[in-house]
Image (cartoon, rainbow, N blue to C red; front, side, top):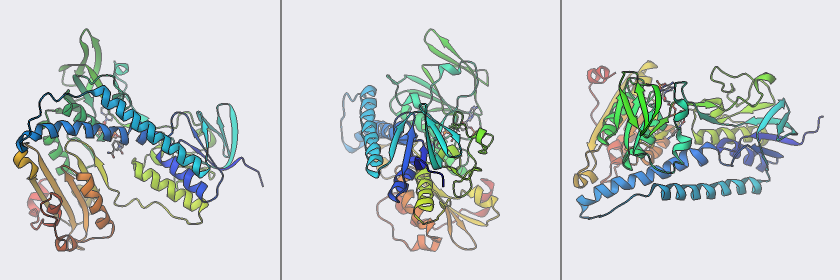
Length: 458
Ligand code: NDP
């Protein structure tokens, strides 16, 4: 039998790669992990974590505005962007240290450098070749910038998290998670934000009620949301940048942020040369066990472009390590994965949207409510909350829960357990609300949206 340097060689020390390495090592495997940059990956270094810290910072601006209605006088409140970024960097440094310690304590060998797979059992890093029985690709993704004149003048979420100064004016392009989250951060902190989306309505794939409700709320936050509008070119001017739009209009701005999707990091890995099948976007094609078309090579997380969320990558990594090294074969369960968009207000969902359920031929009952939260009766803020349940009419099971409003992620996380456990609308009805809270509305919705109205809204 061939002797290998390692049982498992992981490429990419992000959420999925680190979890897979630690668990595999815990099961007794000899593991190495290669990382070209810092340990932590997109989520810790330039994604979920720094973004959420900025979202918290931005929320404070709203709290200060809301304070007056509760009797507070807050004078001279100033925001120091550089301080927020410095504090965020410090926290990320701390988390990186924790990740490094976790790997070291698990006995995983960390190898610094860009890795390339050179054979089904060999990886090259910084001119050195390592062999391993199994290779796991967990290299994540990277922002894509459309090929338009002036693209080199734009930034992506990577740079937005490290700007030395907050731009007074910014144009954000895209209608996905990242676009609406950053539009919210900059707007709350005082930037004039224009959000451009090429389609009919932001957040494609989300429930239609959620999408239009959020669009209205973003506009209330003074975000200049322009739908069916894209950028054709960007030029440098004496006072910043000028952005030419598909409708012929021109916007003067200080920064243009492209949030136009992410592509899997596979270009320099040498996978296709070895027969590993990639899809048209360059994502590694894997089966339910995260195995590629080459039996010794596996891949998981964003590089496979399935459900691009950190907790999904870590779950995939854990299942992979348990299966190969823990004598506990299991696949990651992809049903009812909850997710949130940390816009202002936030969005969180679990399960099927109304359209998706109807698209599957399921007869559904819809329960929907929207209201002004109690806090805003005194704050005076014109912000509303939306809650919606999609219920299977035949089985009474709750197929989807959707929310736009403060603390949506915190609320939907709990509902996700109920939905995962197969809760019916009768279970929701039998649950006593916590009063006064916004969350209690999820257990007090009694009136179905009339079928004709629900259908008309499709
Ligand atoms: P998304 O794929 O969600 O959105 C990309 C957006 O850019 C879409 O609105 C898309 O439009 C638009 N777009 C794509 N190409 C172009 C183009 N050439 N010109 C103009 N517009 C374009 O990507 P994100 O970058 O927002 O996020 C990437 C992934 O990261 C998400 O899929 C998500 O899974 C994950 N993520 C999760 C977060 C969370 O859980 N809170 C936060 C941030 C990211 P169209 O709809 O027409 O295709």
